[in-house]
View: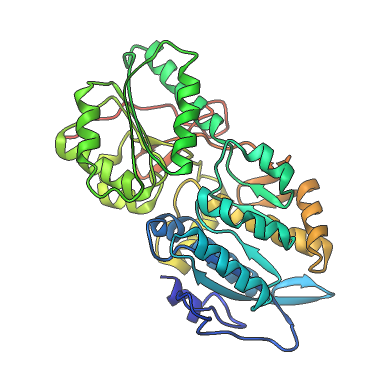
Length: 406
């Protein structure tokens, strides 16, 4: 998908490098530098491919396309089109660091965009910081974020630390139990990657203040192919609530295994991947009532226009949690660049810390480098992964009962 866009539509002025880790196959060194060079290293192969290719890569392409169609960004007193350099980090942190070094020192990019996933972002954040690149991260979830942004003041998070997500789903469960819809029994599983470990800890901490009973808890390594034993063990504990802090491939695998085994907890919550179009496409009506982190309210004119442009360029729908946030972060970056009017990156970072930006998701402001007002729990209701928590947020939908899988 990325190669098709890179070579035809989204970069009018220059080209996009190949996915291979060798030197870019298309490199348009502009001697006059009438372009702005943006680069990124992101997962186009390996276990993070599904997430990266759904939430970030299409939005990077779309934003570049939108900017270039509008004539570019105003820098140094004139509009400059965007030239792109792109590498495959192979879902490996060490490859990501090498590629970022190459983008900085060989390709001489003006700006870097982040990779996908907490572990990958953690790996490259020191390189971004050392070279004073603003880093607006769409998929960097860690409880350490408030501490990290003090160390790396160039890092901006579009998602929340883990605790709000853990607290939000537990709050939802408490309301459901109070309404008599579920009992106390909860089964939890998680991928033993950094993101999964931190998220399950946040949920466990939130449960500590309740009288829910965690009747089963297990972790599994990233890349686990057969998740049936994980589902079987959870099913044997007879819970009303199943929570999985998972990545896209295992979110798919856990759902498939649960359906095959007829595992029908009243709450089925999975992690990253629950909002992806491929999840909805694969499980269709069986997604009804499934919960996960995030969600959105797509009924604003700005988001409807975004969806239309996204489909026109990428040939499919955006995911319903991170995609529009990713695009919003890019809008903020573009506005900060034009506010400064040069590629003075430290000055751009200060603007990002201080200003409010108009985006497709509404006004975006970073408080201590973390975006606020996020959806924390989503639920599939028809074709939409609606935001259901915080329930007092405009556009929040009431939670529905999950039908049993036959």
